[in-house]
Length: 573
Ligand code: GLC
Image (cartoon, rainbow, N blue to C red; front, side):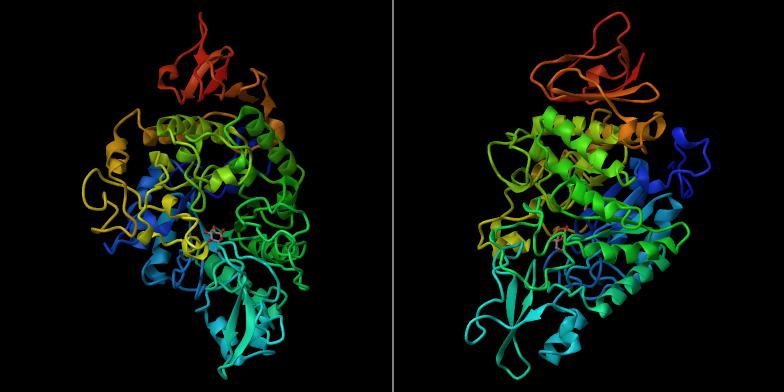
């Protein structure tokens, strides 16, 4: 999509001569707005809708096609807004419904789509439904909306099974009944303040269709679905042999009793039907941490969801063989259902990739996403981050960027313990620091107490070094990360052959074991060097490179070589 008034579709060269244009979401670059930390319009230290609205021109100039806004609903904020007390309103700390409407309209006027975040696995314990369930007591229809069970043991004092909560501790909490006696237990796969809904209850299904409709009618272009793989549980609630499963990783087994059960697919068929009732149809992107690429693709069958984040790619270490194998298997699995891959490097739940890529690389898996190991070389991490951006932008499909990655921000790993807000910290018995380090408010200016974020004291403190990474510091520096992102995003729109496409639009090139290289027509190649020595490039002209020394170079008459931990886009000659 180019700037200006929103267009619903963007014909790609490959398809411009056929009747059906390519829907925008098959190739869009979407910018994730973690609202608490993007920009603070009212100066209270917490990001808000006013802050986002004031920075929409920045996002349009960056060259993204869409934004995804993390939950902005009324919430006690026990889990950064993923504990929703009312799905059809705005938390006063973020603004008002009227402001949300303004944001939707202004974004659309700039040509930006807006994806919202729906949290269907659980509500807040302060949601009216949960309060009613507590008040109504055992056996009531109100309790049916959640997963209440009697405890085990003679006096019911033990949890119904051994499931563990993602943030730590048991996944069950015992309630006090209205008459003051110790009562039933309710399931919470996350924090105790996030009771899991019972998706076998028809009232839950109807309610969520109404919520989706509420926001679609106001102009939301789609929804990111939180914990999309968690909604349905094995109703026999069997004990888990391995009680250490963690949501933000492969589930580790194919037949898990509360992740990725077949019943979830029926729910999404209903959601798709609703999306198709709009013109243009609305769009979904799933957050689903599942066993493998084929299990992810099952969510993307033609009558289910449109897209899902590709976490296999996120979990792959900086290793040519593994990155290439992961990309190829993701493309193949998505091709089988006709869905585009959504490439991701960072989000609000995992260590920022500048830091991950600057660390000694672990084998593929979840450890690298959260772990603190080895020493971090941020210069190396930033070099690899540039190369990784060129790689994901050149692959067919869409891309999700996480706010601040365009500034090269690193994970903040030394936040004072007393400021940590992620429930993981307390629930893990203060052994896991959690995800606050990737949620530190953005630096917009070189000076001021919040580096232009807004107000005097942001909700988490910014490192002193971030003045030099602020938008202001980078904006007019052609060598900065921000300028590099802008250039790459612009080129992705302009270079023929990039954007939408399936796995068959990629021809892998063999330039050695430590190189990821592929060709897309007409005459485009992306080469990433993950080895320890420089690599000779095929004949061609450089379109853009993570190594500025290569920019605008051409091989005419000599050899062009790509240094280690760099990437390049070429026009092959
Ligand atoms: C998802 C969100 C994460 C949240 C969790 C529970 O994984 O991305 O931030 O804590 O769901 O809602």
